[in-house]
Length: 293
Image (cartoon, rainbow, N blue to C red):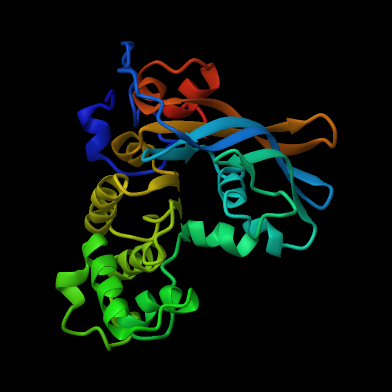
């Protein structure tokens, strides 16, 4: 991938010039597997404010898709449309079409509860329940009707192993999850999310509160999990997007002629290797090279 060695070694804001250098070369093609999400002309409103508009993209099965862009460009807003989290915000609404396996995600017959079971989410700040490690992982399966202890034990172990946490916590499963380190808590939250066997895992800047070592473990975990799950991640760290994602969507914010307010738009969406080596839009290149953002 066309990220310079210097850029990989240095951490920092994407606004610092030269963080990622573009090399003009062809990027390898990426197979288009089954589309899990098909987004057509999506817009998100908070009351009369249009927060993001004109989003058209497909999210493919068993791939990692990264959303990048400056603050306020609609990355997280768009991410939350995929499991209907805007439903709980008064005045929020989604326009356009978001299809999940050809089913209108916002259709009147679709259960938001079932959507969130099949499309899990990991948040920016680790948020373990004030319960034991065991009870954190078993919470979702219990809500879904699993009551057999042997079955719950199996789910807890499998989920913690999948999150590369089992060996670290297997002897203290009844201890409070709040006693774990930040990186361990985030892996616990990932284990809790996948315990109910969702099809999609959404991650909203899951490494922003973690140190580089914990971040590397989460990135390695994402690469391992994509064989079982489709992953969509919001990140401000372009090096992270370049390292872990198969496809990248670049968002920015521009003045909305309808209301003279800045609104998020999708500028470009492509295979990650191409986005970072030969983007099609000058705005993408300017952001990646640190000329703005």
